[in-house]
Length: 202
Image (cartoon, rainbow, N blue to C red; front, side, top):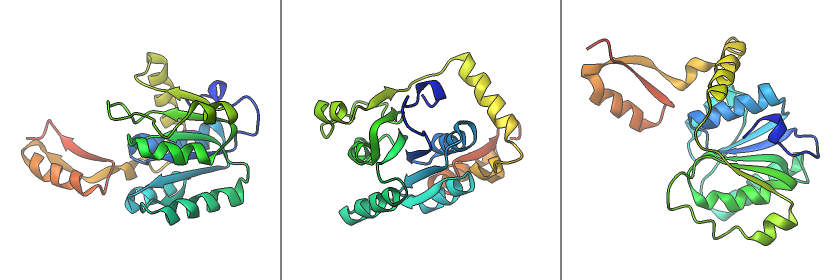
């Protein structure tokens, strides 16, 4: 969904917002910065630690606290740099309430990629056909992948393995299978995108 051929046909394609910076969100940040060549990728998340990781991958972190003033501040920060709005928004949170903000941050003719809302509680009651039409938005849902996508992903990681802090998304400790409960406790802290369990080491 973030291939150059699928991005907006008009405009610079130099700015994006990624909503949710878990592992897939961080990968989106890296792809947009390194492969697409965007100047600015704003990262929105409720977790300050995840935002620190996203910054290491080239993102501009913006903490989500949940109040209305917070939304206005994020919009002001982004529109100071891009008065017309960003070119691309990527939903990675799984939360339907973020869609309104994503649409508001997009420029006319922008591209919105839905990835996280793979569940029934995802009715888009805040998004109207009028908004999509008047802003000339392209909305694309993304689910599953092809062998070509996997090949491209591996090539990307190999190409930028020296530039991107790939190890930062993994826990520094590798847990034995007998320590699985400790691994789950570590995972629940949210400190790392993925906790490593060595299934060959019991």
